[in-house]
Length: 158
Image 1 (cartoon, rainbow, N blue to C red):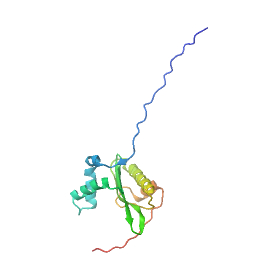
Image 2: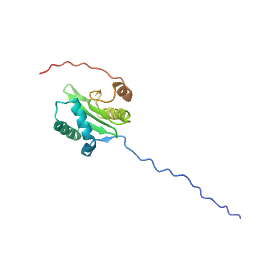
Image 3: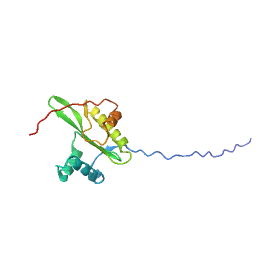
């Protein structure tokens, strides 16, 4: 009987693609990387507040249970659940969505989607956007695939 000689088949092996998490929660270790940028931007928006107060506020956000403080490679975002006695379910209030770098717009869009998902999961039905954002309103609307409503508010200074 003739023996069949089998030639080895060499299959190209691709290394497994690295699992890269698109975003993660902001923690104390991120202050070194993001702190100077965030302090500068907060200082521009709120020049009447001292830098040390901004730094304390940033640190406190990390530990607040009703706060979603997240970052990606080129964007950072923070949103909080606000409540009212007549609306106990609350609403998500954007504190900031800021970016730096060439992919910042895409990443800020993704962070808006993550905030939306977080808010939906905790049972709120409203998301106040464009309070302090580097992403134009039309791109926020495109990222969230929904209509953005406008609310007018009246106030007096005390």
